[in-house]
Image (cartoon, rainbow, N blue to C red; front, top):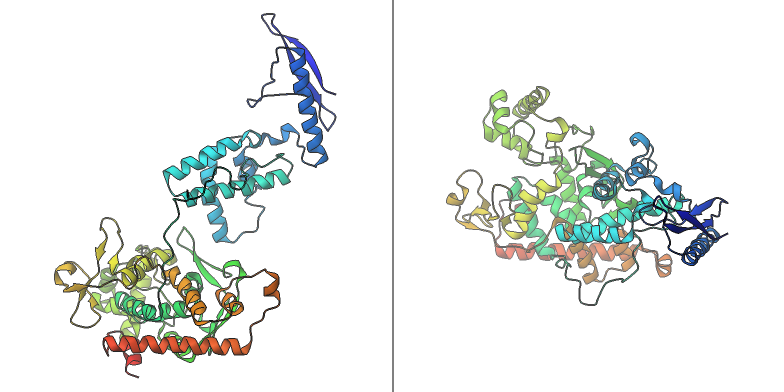
Amino acid sequence: MASAEKRTDRIGRTYYRARYIRPDGKKATVKGSDGKAIEYPTKLTAKKAARAAQDAADAAAKRGRWVAPEEGLVTLSEYLHGPAGEGGWLSRHELAASTEQNYRNHLRHAEQRFGDTVLGDIRPEQITAWEKQKKSAGSPVSAATYRRMLHLVLEDAVEDGILQSNPAKQRRGRGKRAGRSSSRGPEKAVTDSLGILLLAERAALLSGRDDEFTAVILTGYTGMRWGEVVGLTPKYARAGEVRVEQQLYELEDGTWEQCPPKDDSYRTLDAPPWLTRLLAEQVARSRRQPCQCHGERWVFRGGAGAGSGAGPTMKEVAAVAGVSVQTVSNARRRPEKVRAETLARVEKATAELDAAGRGAGPEGSTDHWRRSGFATWVFTPAATGWYPPKAPQPRRPVPVDARLYPGLPVHGRGAEGRATASWLPVQERLTRHGLRHAHRTLMEQLGVRKVLVDQRMGHADSSVSAQYAHVTDDMREFLLRVLTEQWEESLAARRAMHPRSPVSTLDRLLGQ
């Protein structure tokens, strides 16, 4: 029952407190945002406040949303990690290691602001101000991601009966005006079949081996994700098809997690005969030794520069193995060109240096291409003709020797002085993930049915019409035919530029 309670302070001043009955039968006092009882000057105002609090509590109870105020006394950090860091929100969810890593990174920003704040004291205006501060300090996209993660956590707090409502909830369209989306990024850059071929050739020249040629072609003609290509094993590179059964995900500590493909998008990708042959050659060319981190063989292995740089240098390995630095470089980049006896000596020397603590084991090895290393030293310079800025080096053009088409990259000290030209861009702003977009765009352009496009990309269509559409053999045969036509046209266009290539795989294809 709502009522006004007369009180007197230490100096004899009279005031009133608003009292009401909680849904659990206990008597409560109306308090302010500071957690202290509000002092009303008159009995009438106190009664009005008490009735309002009583009505709000009763309405919340009818909706099943009433929460005892003392339940919300847990702080955000306590809710996330539990007492003494055990049994909190993060531990009760079964997450992949990669997802848990991302969750922790995103929530770290929320904890910096609200970690010591009691959940019941977090206000919507505080969250909005925090998001605006994050937007002004960095990426607007990241700021929105941090808010979504906080919303997810606080929504569970509502379900757990700790909060009555979610203070991170945002009303749709609130504060937005048409034409004010100034933070939009540029449109995703894509390329065509000839661009894919030129990129693959340059990637092979930059890495010094044919592995990257096949990897880029595979991505451009299947739309596989980065982790799916890196995580492809020989048993899933089959005649006429590639099976996407797993991916490799690099964690922040340098280790690699073998996990399901994104969103459990297991699928079988039809591969034209020419792509099957390229993959078969790549499997035969790849090293036979299993990787250090998983003990498995992979279709694609990291090249020089693929690791973090923590492993033994080529000069150190050369000194222990009693060979030249160039021989060590060939052993890492083109093992098929090194005698088996010499290759064994190089690998033994590398293992001995790792065991002696000169390397970092799996974290510093070249077993897998690292996303940032591949982008910096292979894909971005192949696509744009420029190396991206990498401290202490600024953005700079790729120096090449133009005596052999399309130009051989010049490496080492004084490379710019020894070069005679640099590459023009194949496609500015193109990223490796842009090849996935390019494959989707190519299929749309060629008239491939949407149901097959979605299946190939690993996308789920939950619409009613999609439930009644199915992939047929005719659709698959059509896809293989048009992809082969695109491949042959790109080879013809490249042959018209020059009939030879310093990349052995492409040189053979051009001569056919």
